[in-house]
Figure 1 (cartoon, rainbow, N blue to C red):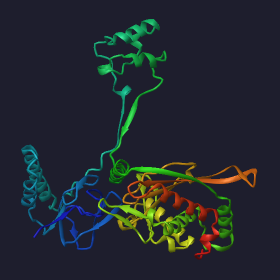
Figure 2: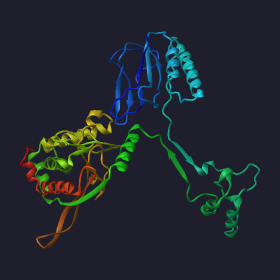
Figure 3: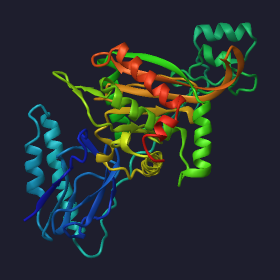
Figure 4: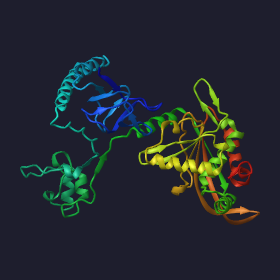
Amino acid sequence: MAEVVRMPKLSDTMTEGVVAEWHKKVGDEVSSGELLAEIETDKATMEFESFYDGVLLHIGVNKGAAAPVNDILAIIGDKGEDVKKILAEEAANQPEESSSADAAESSKKAEATSDTQKKEEAPAPSPTPAPAAPKPTTVSKSAQAAKPSNGKVVASPLARKLADERNINLSMVKGTGDGGRIVKRDIDNYNGGGGFVAVESFTDETVSQMRKAIARRLGESKFTAPHFYLTISIDMDAAMEARKGINKHIAPAKISFNDIVVKAAAKALVKHPGANAAWYGDFIRYNDHVHIGVAVAVDEGLLVPVVPFADGKTLTQIGEEVKDFATRAKAKKLQPDEMEGSTFTISNLGMFGIEEFTAIINPPNSCILAVGGINQVPVVKDGQIVPGNVMKVTLSCDHRVVDGAVGSAFLQTFKQYMENPVLLLGETQI
């Protein structure tokens, strides 16, 4: 008996998935536990294994296409089974608001698909490969423009007036208006040889599942959580000396300034649980554990893997975990559970030359720490102006949970740890 394989819900926030790759084609034998496809979710690309034994009778979502969770992904059964009835029933169960035309089209598509797959069972021809995802479309206005075939120059009254004032022959100007009509910008851009100084163009690119999720979550955060921001400057001279000595003489692996930031933030949160909290509408959750989310930039946006129990880990352990997360994030190998459960988030753009910025809170966290770069600036020490190394950090707070006094107290403790890293090293091994 044929079994329906539906689009799985592979993460807590997933509403639809994109088939990144099929590892089987119609007519292939499939065993339970065998890799069937790769599904792109809002967080990562995941391998999806078959739950059934049989023959792949039908592919419901082509490579590169998207489908909502629970839509038919594939049908697996005995060779020769007719899937037309299953597809027809699926079309009939669509929501009532779907138009009759849509239903007819679905039924027609089901029949055509079934007929095609029957042909594919014959030994000679191979199955038709699924079409690739549509490529980005680039449009250029100048490429679309054309002169009328009758040779008559079509121009707006203003364009004609400007051309006359500037002694420009309209027959030498390429129009970019409707139907090749010459408009003001064409006169302004005319360089005397029929060319253009500038050409308007654009590229349309399909939004990935990850970018959709980022847009949705950050949009909800920014427009529902009342953000306020607290910025503080930190003297990094001691941290720089401590890191240099640790990496030279003690640490089994190189530690970064970001590792020190994660550790200092984690220890400060233990002392200020009011900043280690989350908004849940009817209640506020104050977490006793400290799980630090560390923002990692990838090509399609931003992922936030989580360092669990960061307050109890050494600098080396934190560094190794963050490096591993960054490597696997860029390769889309992070698992959804590695990006869940954060109680506080850190976003560090210092390595990109950013001196200071504000970040949007990662819900349900109530705070996110934006870390800028270390800059050498004049500072006053003991009444003298001397060179100093300063790093600015900005704490974004959800005012529903965190008040200014709570956020300020957290930053003061964080600053104390960063300016006196021996306090960190005294509480844990490196």
